[in-house]
Amino acid sequence: MAIDRIPILRRLLVPYTPRPGDRSFLERAQTQRDGDLEVTVAVLDAIESRKFFGVPMARRGVQPVWLKVVNGDQTPYRLNLLTLDPNYFSPHEAASVNHFSSGKRFLGFGFLALLFWPFLWILPLKLFGAWRGNRRMDTYFQSQAFHLRPIHSGQQSEGFVFTNLDIGSKVVCVRLLGAGGAKEFTFHVAVPGLDLDYLRREFLGLGRPETTVDCDLAELQKRLAAMPRAVTNRRGSREGDPVNLLVAGQFATLLSAFGARWDETELISIATSWKTFRAFLTGWDYRYSPVSSLYLFGRQQDFALQRVRKSINERLHLRLWATPLRFRGQPVWVGQVSRDIGVRFTWRTWNLTTHRIDPDVDEARDYVVEDLLQIGRLELAGYVDGVQACQPSNPRRNLTGDPYFTDGKRAALLVSQAKTQPTFVAWT
Image (cartoon, rainbow, N blue to C red):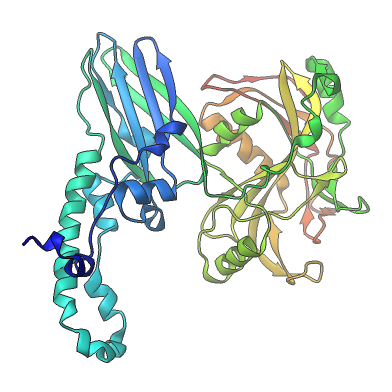
């Protein structure tokens, strides 16, 4: 009788049970076309990847991206996989990261393992089961992978690319190389799993036609210069960080432009506060940590982005507020960006600590400009007055007492939906 038919042994042997027929993720698939090329992408969340591949891949930082390419062109094309994720996992590597390891789990008990000596007869079965399951896992991952080979005219290729984990939003850049040049397809995919700060906000109806104000370049410059110079506390009684950034673009365009390099933020809750505290103590990389609320136009930021570097104590914060202004038909957002460079004690917060910002706030502002320039998503860029200059010898201070100095300029940016060459305008 086969081992798989004996229920007790089947449980002891650490069964590997993927579900290749469970393809609910295809309901969220996105498709783009360029001529006779068609590309479809779907990103699996933690639950979907566990069902389909039979192991908790998200816990190991692995995220499968399903990709299908249909080539109706006369030219063969090949996927440039490094563009999709320069640190992708090979199929066998992704399987190896998720391998069963009953022996290591048992030895992890140390001397306490002696308490289980009456059950030591189970260990060989567990080890054999893990070995058997891992072999099946290797074969399954390999069979489901998108294989790097030419996709000839009239053919199609599909399968999974094993990328690094992103939740909230994921930017998937598919670059196909052919004899006549490269074709690029950029997808911005929402991935379930985060309680994002902007999901419960409606931006106060500022997108309704009766509330919008269309501006030409001169009118936009005039209105931007008249915006408040700094954010405030909730009551509006004290000023904080400077309002040093203005971005024009649809909300989805902003998320797409920043998404590959910046992370969204979660709402403040008991769970996210605990994760933030743990990251603070251990240096764990909590990419989606909530940010504190700052106020402009009488309300807290509509959404925030951040770019974590070595630890949660070293990151850039970007907060944006919607306005009724429109430029070239695009919504105008005003914002504040600063760079955290450490932690210090303060009496002004409930936990007696705060992030210390780089006093040269213009550097963080210009970092955003450079970042969007590097990825080619700036259509128009310039600088406008409105913050009011202050010198290092006589700085202003934010709400937690950190000093800052500035040349008084705001960066004004028009974000493009696709890669483009920027134009710089002669603003002051």
